[in-house]
Image 1 (cartoon, rainbow, N blue to C red):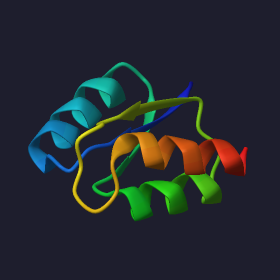
Image 2 (image 1 turned 90 degrees about the horizontal axis):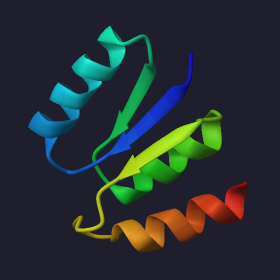
Image 3 (image 1 turned 180 degrees about the horizontal axis):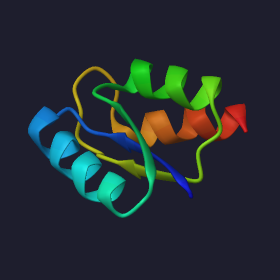
Image 4 (image 1 turned 180 degrees about the vertical axis):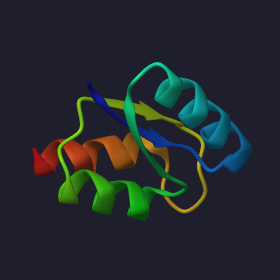
Length: 71
């Protein structure tokens, strides 16, 4: 099944989404900040990224630009 990377600083939201997506058969990884998200994307291939735009330290647009440079 597809691998999903959830990136959001709201731990409750990522926990809930991970639970729902896992029940549907998706492999789910999570990251709570931009640096962790970039490291996660660099270390393993993902099929889908669900990305929050408003995060502390590094916004979602910057995270996406850096991840796209890796691929």
